[in-house]
Image (cartoon, rainbow, N blue to C red; front, side, top):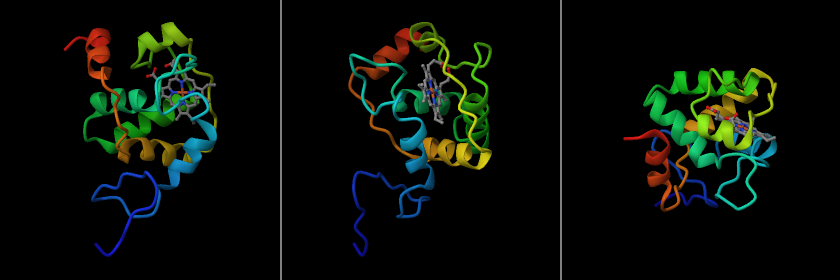
Length: 131
Ligand code: HEC
């Protein structure tokens, strides 16, 4: 191996070895609420669960995934939610009206990053959504 990746970033074939530019922005603007792990005092669904719901909805359609996350961050609404259980539990997310270029970078990071899913999450998903 000529290159060794640094830290806990999981690299996939189509990603450059450097950290995704959206990762630092996610850490700055989103991760205070969207934590990596489920915890007792949660104020929002953990990031892996958010990414998973959008990946299941949009499959391999990266553009549609990114557009949906950008739209959501600008205008969260009960009509657009893919996570109605989270809206009931945590109340609607406040809008995050960042410039499009920043929201797109964050959304693309959510699309490309492989977030580890804790044990028991699949069961939770099936209980919430069926299937
Ligand atoms: C102040 C806390 C807070 C911050 C900061 C925050 N969120 Fe959220 N977010 C929430 C809560 C609460 C929910 C669950 C309820 C809901 O879906 O509205 C949520 C849900 C979501 C969802 C799922 C929406 C759905 O219901 O389909 C996405 C996508 C999302 N957030 C993206 C982001 C992004 C991207 C950022 C950073 C730009 C961000 N959030 C910052 C609180 C936050």
